[in-house]
Image 1 (cartoon, rainbow, N blue to C red):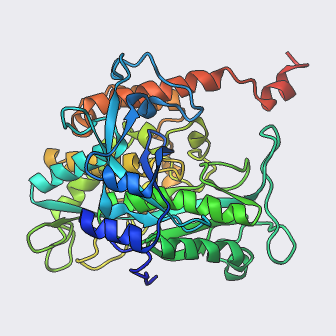
Image 2: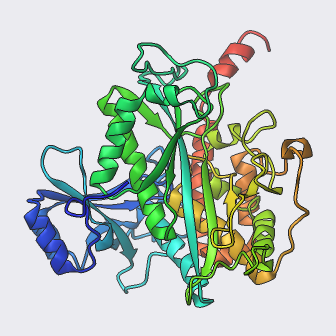
Image 3: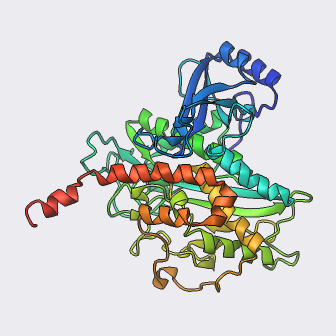
Length: 459
């Protein structure tokens, strides 16, 4: 995808940003931050007011980072300030973009958050990812990532008690069966996908390829490889972009891990490699193309810590419906060479592009947190020089489940993992667990249709 830089230039200083805003006759600017669930929070500011606060930022109360997906707040968290003080959300001007679906010219910008004394807000997801990237930088290293994001298009669902339905495509029919990589089946939704591409073009979201996945109206968008923070920004923005494009055609784009009961789940596969800042050499490969010890230590770190970080990769009760024995999704952290049954896959590649793919992560994950967590696991493997288990050359599903099967178990595992707390930040981990435990309590209050169906008259 080649971008029109007049629509979505990468701006680096206030003067260029001000000129761009006025030249484009931008009316308002959405100042946004991702919360723990990757939901957009923030304020909408008139253009000239935004220009006046570029350096100082807008103010938001701390509690926005303690909101559950339901909107309830984890007020009992020991991390949140009892006075509910404001944090400053300072625009990162490199993220300033058009919002292409409004009639009035509107821009959006992602903000970094700071306390009143200038310290970064350590429990803000973008700050957490930056913290991990800086740990690599301190060792002269730079992570490179490429996310692959799966999602479903569905018919509108106005009653949450009813199952989600497959949407009607351009043929006038609903898709049936499993049609992985089907070109004509992807064509059924060209009108939606083309609008997504148009929106991405206008807002500097770099999509590399698109494919039809195994589920009905299930698609995958692959992002170009690059800087973790920038790729997390683009994934964060794409979710909203996809939802708005689908809405224009009376459909829903959902990133739930398991929206359909008997269909494949949706994942965020993250390809990751580590290069030297000085020279750009990929540390995962030797000059002759063989695997370097760093690759094996990185995989060892993923094997040791991904199960402990599971709640960061699979953050919702629905996430664990995807991680099951009869699923196509991974159920353990065995690793293999070009083996898609493994949770950790090393694709066939030359020395420059040697990488490992984490296939455990759900599409419902917060991209900042997911990227921070997988890079943290690999970082610990490099620091601790963890040796991986032997490579798997069979179907890894035959080797059993070794990942947590419920959110509550995953949160307990994260809570007990000191090394991950140290890398990600103990206050972030505590705040995250508090929000997710609140969601778990709220979920447990709900009586499901399964319970009414099988328990009402039978027990």
